[in-house]
Structure formats: structure tokens, C-alpha cells
Amino acid sequence: MFKRELKKCVDWSKIAKNDYHHAMVRSVTDSRPLKVALQSALTDDIYSREMFMKGIDYSYYYEEN
Image (cartoon, one colour):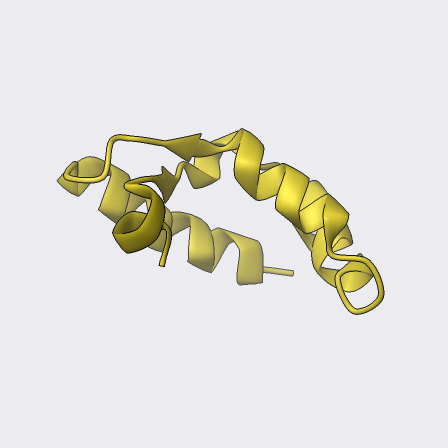
């Protein structure tokens, strides 16, 4: 959605795990913290394979206990 509509993608390395989890919990009643976290991590490096792979790595990292 970001890539198609905004020509941007999220650089997940710019969002701390605890900040992301806190924003996700809060997003049930207030989506602003999540929006702020995502907006601050947007990059126009949408064609980078490295950025794509980094996103996958971080998704696993965020799911770890």
C-alpha cells in the first residue's frame, strides 16, 4: 500500500521493537502512535532488495519474545 500509493516503504530498522509493540497495543483505541512510528521510518528506497529483505528480518525480530 505504501509502495503503490506513496512510492515509499518502511525502513523497519528505524522503529524500535518496544516502540512498535507499544504502538500496536495502543492502536486498538488510538492509531496515532503507530502512524507516527511508521511515518518517521518511511523511505523512498522502494526498489532495494536489501530494504525488502531487512523488512522480512525485522518482522521475525518483532515476533520474538
